[in-house]
Amino acid sequence: MQLKILCFRWQSEGFPRPREKLKWPWLDHVNIGAFAEFKIRSFSEGMKRRLSLAKTILIRPKVLLMDEPYSSLDEPGMNLMNQFIKNVTQQGTTVLMTTHNRSKTAEVAHRAGSLFQGQFKNLEIQELVGANELF
Image 1 (cartoon, rainbow, N blue to C red):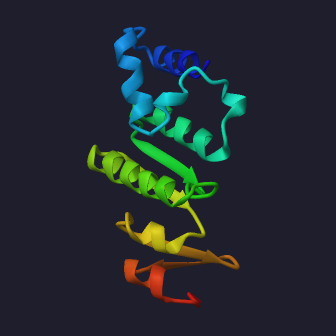
Image 2 (cartoon, one colour):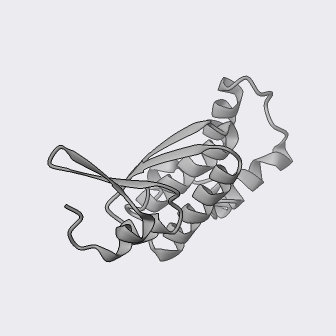
């Protein structure tokens, strides 16, 4: 079922239907290739996040908005997320994320800021990790 959704997404972006052997790298890249024939409703939240990453790999957006990208992920999943973020930014995608996980964000951030009670503050990347109080 999941491969049909990925193929549909690929085709909706104007690309031709991929050949069978091209399907696995999308899923293997985010470590869910072994679950290709499973129903998405049986996926854990972390697996659903990984499926979302696979979809993003297909369309290569110029700007990627990520809301709490580390939630529902274990440590290997968070590391995979950071590797994914590094890869897409190296390919020219701008990533804008909201998160409470400052230490993981500091590993991939180029710029940072914090919003608190209507105030926005630009931060140095080192401030993300070390500061208990940002305001």
